Image (cartoon, rainbow over all chains, first blue to last red):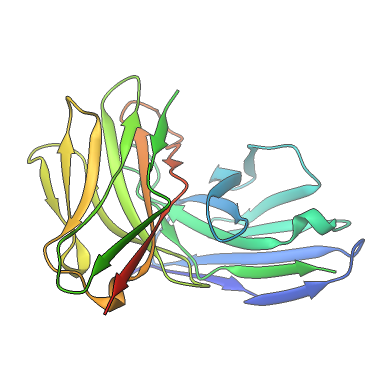
Length: 114
Length: 116
């Protein structure tokens, strides 16, 4: 069976510090990978998606970046955090290709920028 | 363009009563439709999906959803609510012919409160 891991679970960082959140998927190959941010416990904002190694697409301009160095690894980064970067970050995967596209989510990372 | 509307910010239902969480969608082609549930400080969990076929789809934890093409709706239902069903529910849609990138659009979520 497939599992998705995210770490850390919680993070408190000062403004201006760097960020690295990691997501890994087990039990599948060539997944589509996604980073979302959820603010105020409600709607999801798609930040990045990837259909393969080194292939990253950004949905919104911001000071965040993403990388996919391996097939099942997805990293969210920032060089300098802003207060507005606080939120709940979710990684998700879906079967690549022509599948129906349901996404499976990790447990999330709660980021607080102080 | 595709979109999802969840018209109710919160739904309150008494334990043991049937529940309905509403969702309407808009896509240019034929839809794939999904429901997810989120418990506090957790990731979203996939509940069920509609691809094709029977309009009534059964999913996890006794939930089901009814696809209505004429009304472009995909309401989530459960015959008897449990207190443990209290959570945030998300409806999502994808255009079936969106190609290699499976862009899924999520609704803003509906908070379900089951009252003991």
